[in-house]
Image (cartoon, rainbow, N blue to C red):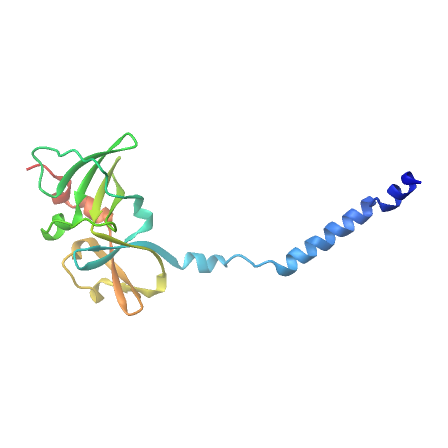
Length: 188
């Protein structure tokens, strides 16, 4: 008697296939689609930060890593004041530059919001200390403004900007900074 009950409660292969088909139909019915490729391609990503009172944004694609200020930095004798020194980051010696001191001649006041933006120069990495990192943002590519709409003291590093809520964020090109001959020579 037990044997016949077990057989009547058992599902056939066709029952299982029918249930899986019904489950698949329900999944398709409630599934939310991925964004269209055009939507994805129309976004530009950047990291927002301040240098003194100036707000800037760097392309996320230029930044290899974002670090807290290292606990230990070794000064390098015979370098310009904006060259803070080198830090050992997971076995890699990373030169750290005070970006504000380099650009406007005032030392960065470090706080809990200060960060080191790491980017590539040639075959190596370099870090720039920024006084305050605001966060990462996405901008619609069509909201970019031309350089003529921007004015400021960092013109040689800025090609365009983005408007967000009535505020213009100039795009600071770390690659332009790396190409600057004055930045390449930290020795006195």
